[in-house]
Length: 366
Image (tube, rainbow, N blue to C red):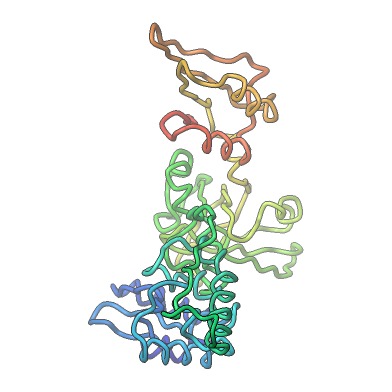
C-alpha cells in the first residue's frame, strides 16, 4: 500500500482512493511529520503507514530533499525558527513552509498551526538576519555569537473546522478529522441514519453530509446534478433533478453541511442504493424547521442587555426562546414573548456559543 500510494503521489484523487482503501482494510495512517516523514509513504509496521511529504501540494522534491539533508546533518528540528535557520531557503521558500504547516507536518513540534502560520515571516526574517550577521563578522559581534531569541506571533488557535479547511487544499482531503463531527450531535436530533446506514424505503428519508463535489449532466428532463455527500461513515451520491436544482442549487456549497430529504431505492443495475432528492436544506434551515425551542440558562450575574442585543437581529423567527433564570433566592423559567422568537441562523448560534458555555445554550428539537 505504501508503494502504491508513493507511485500515485502526484494525483490527489488516487491518493485519496488508496487512502480510503487502506482504512477499509484496517490500516492506520500516521500524519506527515517534519522530523520523521520521508518524501514517500513509508510502512512503520504491518498496520501503519507514515504519510509522505511528497504528497503535499506546494512542496516539490527539491525542497523536500533540502529539508531531509538538513535533518540528517543536524538532527530533529526544535521549532519553526530552528527549521528556517537550518534549511536552504533558496529551495525551501515561504510557500513550502506554509504548506507543511497547514498539512500538520509541524504538529509534533507545536500543534498550534495558526501561530506557526502567522510566524512564518518572523522565522524567515530571523534566519536571514542570522545569515547576514554570520557573513559580516567583525567587532560588532557578541563574544558568543548569540542573538536574542525570536518569539512567535500571538494569535488564537484555529477551531477544528479552520484547521481542516486549511488542511484540505494541501492534502486534497481531510486527514486529521472530519468537518461533519462538529455538527454530529446536533444532526442526530433530526437525521436518524448516517449515510452508511441507509436502506431502501418507501418513505422520504432525511440524511445529511458535507458536500464533497457536484457535477451536472443533461437528461431528457433537463439539467441534473449529482452531489457527493460525506458524513465520515461513507460517501454517497445524491441525484438532484432539474426543477429542484434550478430552484435550490445555491444551497449546495462545497465543504458545507447539506440536509436532504429524498427517496432511497435499490439500484438494480449497479447495485447499492440510488438516492433522489426531494428537498434540500442548509443546516440553518434545518434548525429552523425541526427546532422546538431555544433554551438559555442564565444566573444572577448575567448581562440581560447583551442577551437582548444578540437576539434582536434574529427576532421574529419561528423558534420560541425560554430563559432558565436563577439567583441566590429563586429559580424560574421564562418564555419570552412571541416577538422574541428567533431565526436559528449560523450567526446567532455562533454568537451565543461564544458567549455561553455549552450546558447553558441548547436547541431542543422535536
